[in-house]
Picture 1 (cartoon, one colour):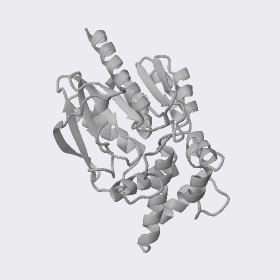
Picture 2 (tube, helix red, strand yellow):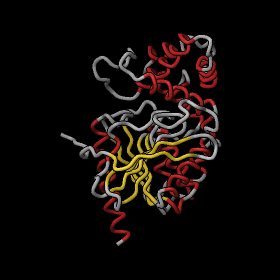
Picture 3 (cartoon, one colour):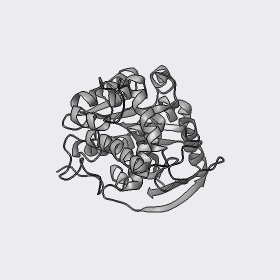
Picture 4 (cartoon, helix red, strand yellow):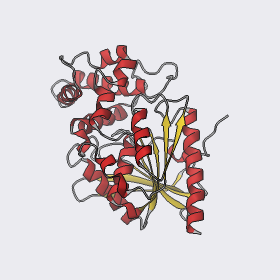
Length: 326
């Protein structure tokens, strides 16, 4: 049976205030003298999952997790003000400086993989290595894969896509869908419509996340935390509406800046949220990367093959970094 590392509680949690009205929650786990690793969650807006530390050997790693602007325990909750990719990258460097860390391993999945790559491109001297899961490059083709009627997600799940876009006027495009949802999320005069829209967005993402959903999930939202549905829908739509606040093909166009950084890419063969082509294209452009394809998995870390591959990646990276430093 494939297992993750044992759960470990945090030895410290705190807040980091920005200079523009946000207060970021962060926590530290594992070995304070271990290899520092920053865990960047996905979404945008997903917050830290309850078991994210289980991808790391707590004896080897000093694990740092933080919740991005507007979600989880960061405040103000749901705020889109001063909430762009540039702000998040500044937050990451501010947190590193606050903790007195010169350089660290950066681990990110889905939207977290986007931020991890941008962090390395922005300050390669501060990144020891990268571990990525479910690669999202933020290109038009990546956004269309998730939102467009001609995208892979809509083609594989047409009945769920019909429910997701049922209130959006034709012709359907990624931009029109985001615009409709953004207006619905901002409708303070109709709480029922707003909540229904938040649920529909969240259900679309949830249904795509795994090859097989556990019984009782995917079609109802009664057991999903309203706070999580709210932050994920609000922030994901906000970032997709604004093309993730990065130039088209920015990551691949700047891959030369991180070619020397060692990295591992873990990708589910049947990832419907972040398409396989993105991970493969990245691996081909990035000289110092290794790609692990999980043949029987989709997008979620809850799928056993994905979790096992991530544990293998962190184990091997720890050995590599220790040997490099010795």
